[in-house]
Length: 85
Image (cartoon, rainbow, N blue to C red; front, top):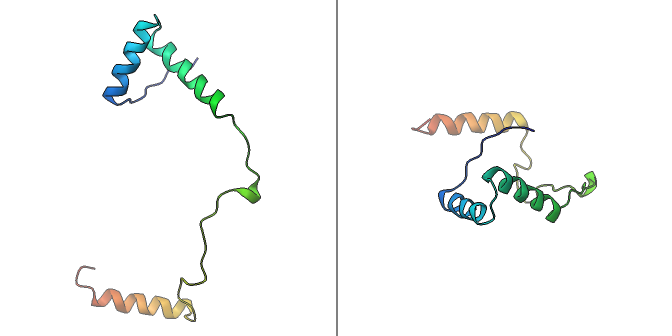
């Protein structure tokens, strides 16, 4: 068995502590049972790599028509004009 520490908001801790006392369970057993219930409720399933989330893309963003060198030069020029840089 692995020993660990967790941080729990005060209100949740008070409710869990009361629950454990009412059901004559230790806090550790209460948290273990809660974790087991969570894993039963949300069973693990693998998502095929083709269906994994990807950020949306758009053809309307970016610096179309500018080369990397042109972008670098414009960024340097913009930075030289920025009094906070």
